[in-house]
Length: 309
Image (cartoon, rainbow, N blue to C red; front, side):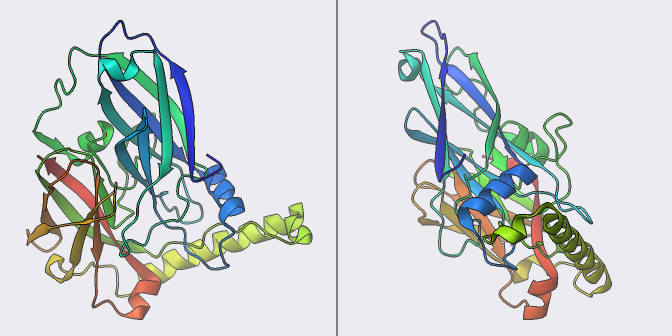
């Protein structure tokens, strides 16, 4: 995607039956470079998680949150699966239009602007089903299972082939389970602060190959130094869940959604989301009492333990 939204059109044969659509979204180094060219972030700006919505036939169907895993020297790729059903009359002409677009962000969510820029649709699977929602009723999913079937997203999976969850890397979670009451259990941890985002040079001499190699070496050194500083600091342990401020909002219109939070031990909390309208929900964590030094060194991250609706 080279703009705040992009779409692909597919011709499908449904034989008059509803279909289930699965799409694999992908973010890697090339995605981030495309984003840097479009956004031109300031030097030192952090690389933030991306929140995008997936639309089909003109309506929002799901949302995905992607945040690239941080290695000691390099950032790795991230994948996110989304899944939704379409009625037979929605694809009666055999044309499926799949769109990835920016989400409506609440004011309290520090997420990437123009998040859809550079996001790739790696794969689209379309399968005929007997009825909409068949086999997708209320139930319970583990964190990995919820992300594989598109019920939730917490930064993406570590790889499309291995389909591993990897380590937690974002303090945000997106839930796509359409229900009036959703419970998500989160495990809280800390990680090193996000590295600087890629910066597309505006001056011609900065685009030379040798200069680019030097700049990449500086970025790698910064990431390595960030890991060393985090491991040597006293901020490796996350704050107790009761200290955290937990908020939720609709991804469709950005309206706040009430939540009830219960701490389950020193690093686990249950978040009960009460939705009046259907659609993806963004959940975010924050530590209001965190000192400025802690924010520069470490970030709060969370991992989905299980999801129930």
